[in-house]
Image 1 (cartoon, rainbow, N blue to C red):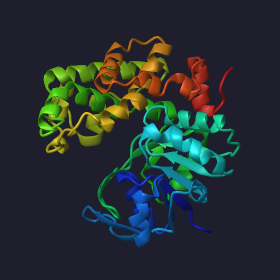
Image 2 (image 1 turned 180 degrees about the horizontal axis):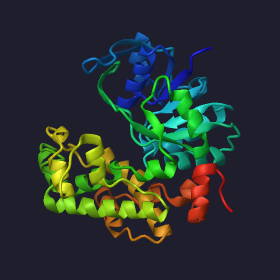
Image 3 (image 1 turned 90 degrees about the vertical axis):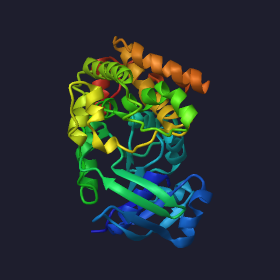
Length: 367
């Protein structure tokens, strides 16, 4: 039986790590990037050099193809989309004319509403191909690009929830990925993966509430330890409470930030501030060097906006989340509500809770 042919969409830190790792596992891998200039060194060498943590994958990873042509990119069984979530809609429109029946597309990660937005764009482009679409809750790799054709892998997560849209397709997607990625587990639905988005809670507020310090020091302080004072942590707790309440309004039991810290890092405390300070993995992590950072321009419109929009639609107070969105709009002089994932962009603005749940599980919109 022929091995699955992969295309990795995106040649950033995560995309390079995934392309190299899949190649070293023996798969045929195509690497696609919208700008060929950014991958020309990889194309010239025919692959990537991967360095890794002790015992991790390393070596020269030969790639089948390196391209900026979406038609070539879609000549694969499984497309792994590893780009900022702010580019999901654009890449969906680029790929739409070239997708074919039976393919699988996975967003790494979807953030909040990624698969719904992607599906809405495919539909609006008239894409008739029957593709299975899924998203992960987080990126499986911690990695960094070490050069134009080099990547360093720091760790591979042990467990990553994944959900398809509709959830009925999740078992088939997990089966297709089981050999290279046994770490993927059933994430229940895209509502669950999207509302367990911890980056939405930690990244934007922590960045914006430390705006003065970031601009004054260019990020020369410990982001999670020095940046999370008791007062900042209380804001994070309020945002987290609103997120969990939005999930509850949809019948979902979302993990709290403290539960997530305990699960992911075995870090605990009586308050969120204590739990963060007790997480040794945060030591040494510096703050962003600028406010023009993905923690704001990606996480606000692609994570906080859809969470707030769901809250407003289904009767949950999201004043704290709305305040952070408004701060981001002011500091960046950008209307993130307009640019973000509104319910209209997700194609769910008219759905009741029952209808939304049915869409996530069965793929059927409306009554």
